Amino acid sequence: WYTRELGDHAIEGNLCRCTGYRPIRDAAQRLAQQAPPTDDRHQQLLASAPPTSASALPGWHNPLTLAEALALKAAHPKAQWIAGATDVGVALSRGTRAAHWIALDRIAELKTLQVGAEQVRIGAGVALARLEHELAGVFPALDQLLPWFAARQVKNRATLGGNLGSASPIGDLLPWL
Image (cartoon, rainbow, N blue to C red):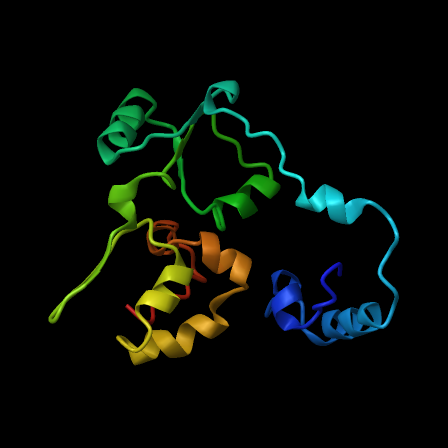
């Protein structure tokens, strides 16, 4: 709205194969024809919020290594793993709660992506946006799938491991694998 770029890339977080595209696209076109607001919301959006430290969040763990994550899971066996939260986030919105969460999104070991002459090694924490960019041309079927997979916001957070580990019946990467 504030940048005046209201094409599909700007609103794709609201575009979903479940809700339909036409009404959302039409609304964006009508919005683009209106004058931008004269409020201070734009400056508020540009301002950074103060970071919240992990210690201020009871039951939230931010390990930096796989060994730390596994030790935390041993100490809290019922803890929920969380990385991109694109699937867990939906469960959270429906009331799912865990006493402990172990975030995996800062573990470098899980974000490894190596392309060799005869193999590709993809860490469980590699975001789908990275697959889309760094594996472009390596797997033609993946090149065809990822543009339709999800909105940019989701691809920036969703991980290969989460897509497989959630065992979701709508896991889009399973046919490719």
